[in-house]
Amino acid sequence: MSEPLITKAKEILNGNYREPGFTLPSQGLYPFQWNWDSGLIAIGYANYDMERAQNEIRTLLDTQWKNGFIPHITFHRESNTYFPGPKFHQASLHPDATTRYKTTGMIQPPVIGFVLKELLDRAQDKKGALEFTRKVIDKVYENHLYLYNNRDLLGEGLIYIFHNWESGTDNSPIWDTIWETMDSPRYTFERRDTNQVDPSQRPSNREYDHYLALIDLAKKYRYNDSKIAEHSPFLVQDPLVNALLIKSNQSLIKLYQICGFGEDKIRQLEKWQALSIANYESKFYDEDLGAYLHYDLRNKRKIRMLTSSSFVALFAGIPGAKRTSEIAGILEQRFGGEGLYLCASFDPEGERFDPKRYWRGPLWINVNWMLYHGLKSYGINKLAEQIRSDSIEVVEQNGFYEYFDPRRSIAKEGKGGYGGSNFSWTAALYIDFILRES
Ligand code: GLC
Image (spheres, rainbow, N blue to C red):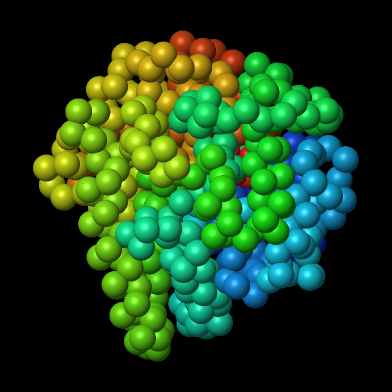
């Protein structure tokens, strides 16, 4: 049953592969290199082509700025199918920006630390993989140093984002609560995404006004982090971004130990780790909702809505035993109710739940992959297996889409695949779900 789809998945990755060594997420819709996509795609490659996996990471790390920052998109070539491109972003306004590539001036969830560990775990040639790790690990450390030095406003070990595109969950209803505080100008521009995907599955024009206004604000301050932190109406501590930073810290500690160097770095990572975990627990956890929430740093309030990001702490090993069973219970009952595939990106009981639109309801294979591994690490095997088999089933019934309708009735008929098609991380993590776990 699965064998032919493995071949198809590999063909998708092959078709999306570009020089100088990166895999675009989906042709037309996303024609460049995206940061966390590259990391997750590399995990898929690591099951059958380690050289590609390493190249993907090498190319990404090559885009790093002088200050350790790693951009969310690198525009390796021109394209007229995507807006906003490099001319709008103007990331070169920042004095430390790379002069070798055109990039954006924002981050994405910091996955590369844990990805390095995943690659090593999957390597047949351990010696070669270790050599690769030794060569690149300091760059990832430098990236964490950048994040803690520039994005941890209160010195509490929790980094902020200033744009929804930094979160990875670009169109979550969470951001509605920020848009309500903004009075963005109305921009005149041509949407390119809706030429390729049904507009009912994409953000609205008004939302794009806010996205562009935030980039204009960053440009006004030449992408200077402290100025942005002072002036941006969007300043959020995100539970997915911070969980992945914590997960990556953990992997870096292990990897430095395996490599046998970087003692001072291990000590620093351990310090960050203790602070980040303690404050993650105390600031994000919500007793009433039984999971971790986003914190709006600008307006000093928790954003009281559940999303799939509320559970990613499991992947980073953050919660203790009591909280873990509370969280797993909410995940199972509220997100895995009758007729639903796990795991919807937004609370299926929430008013703003929309099973078709982007991050407002559909399930995503990348988050499912993290939840699966998180649950497994706590020994919550039945729920973990359900997430894995749901992920495999939606792909096999609908194809390698960007996101999927969580309603079983729709997805079972093969009508539940939305957004970009031949989507790279869906293909890569499908491969990992099948090959790694069998
Ligand atoms: C969308 C997703 C983002 C992803 C990008 C490329 O914008 O929200 O997380 O990185 O597509 O796949």
